[in-house]
Length: 319
Image (cartoon, rainbow, N blue to C red; front, side, top):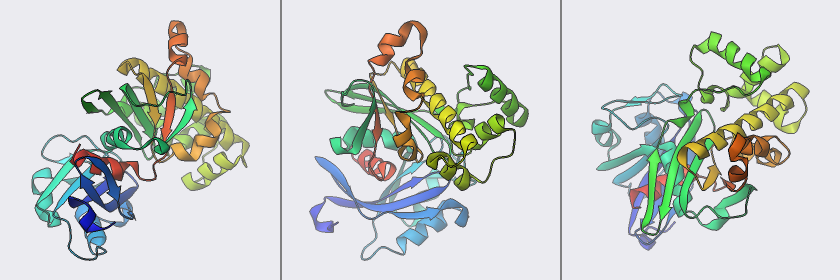
């Protein structure tokens, strides 16, 4: 990425529960952002955002950027921001000074994915289900499982786009059959209130596995690898239920948002993409009683850009 070819070079970050991703981005008002190589760090290896950013900044050759745009996996409200799935906290008013920057703009991580969806080129999307109609206008629901479950709303009109940041991953889990009734009861004993993020997230697969098999799940990487590869029957069955729940929740959110399209994102979505077509995802998505026909006319896409959070943070800096 050549500095001279862009109006400005900024630092961008996508901070989730497990990983903190950083990059430089070239931005211009009338063109898509251009990302440099991403630096991916484990949040567990750093006590706070400032120390992680320093590791990234020390890798920059030449002049460091003076402004930044960070996508954070937490609500962007109040004087102190607390991440949902990692122990970091930060104070927006003092963050720029702590990082040696003049300005840091903050947005929700799935708000950033929504900005990415609005600005990405067509090759950044893969069709999953429903009409083969690109998600380029109207109201679009965006959701995706990772360490947690992110949700946002994108509205694209003739005069541009708007992003509505939400915490939709924390709405109540609604069981649809006897197994999910049992799963809800188990999780209620463990957590009290049960949000859909307890099921549709990296740790959620272990909860489904244990409810189905009656034994404790293996560690998350082992479980996910076995489920995707199909080397363990209980792990694969848990993943099938995961896909079914994802379809049901995607359909619910489309109804809530009045969506004309749905986009899947998140760290886990690309990993399960090859399995969605043979799973109950599509049937669960459309199984909304009297609205089944309407749901079948809503296209579902997946964003396959390698770094949608970073790209979206850059896009949001100069929308």
